[in-house]
Image 1 (cartoon, rainbow, N blue to C red):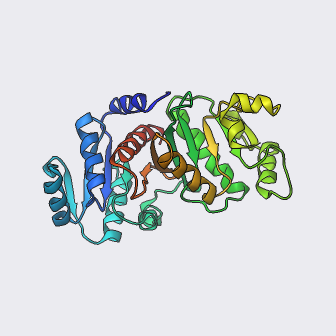
Image 2: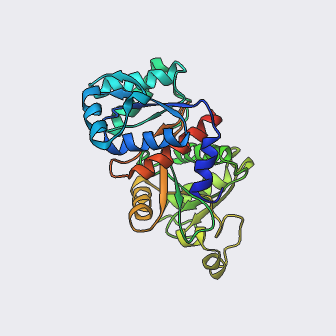
Length: 299
């Protein structure tokens, strides 16, 4: 899979998948959902303030009679109801509407809904970068602030399983840092070294290399210039960021300073959770929906 068109086409082939959409009263969310429905990418249960949603839908010329609807105006209650639809098997995943991420995650993490896997949640994004030869995946740009070694292992495992569902059997994972050798002054490089020394099975299904600077992860020429020769250098599928700040900056740099297409979701629970920024376009939300629809095949 090398581009977004392929991702969308593959999502069309996944039949019978429904996403629950809490706090759906948002124009970009409704446009993304309606476009996905018209393209044949999944079906949707809208959960939220029906009066507010109707008002937006009429203004945007969207017919919400095409959707099942749970009229719940309280945002926390709407998120819990949507997560319960997933827990009860009535929906295969969840898409965040106009609501804070923390409210959605609180519902998904509710013990009584049994959506946890025991693994940490992590954000997972896909980018189609014009001057890169295939789709590029970035993690974690939204959830884990300063991962320790166990958290990094979960982040890596989440992303490796996700891209394997997309058809990349043995993905190439780059552990990003500001230099290519372990350095006590940069503690994350020592964490990366420990992961590679004690991979705990991670290397069974992926090639992993690090620390790698970003240029060495995505540019074969740069890697060769620096004498870096491994399966990942210059050909990374997955970029693992050292902390949330760097991940967020990389995500938004690719989103807003380049002509990329992108989508994102949360991994680590029993069903995918579409988790886009309020600033993301309807197109980004559509791509996120398609990504989540495909990932329901991996759970």
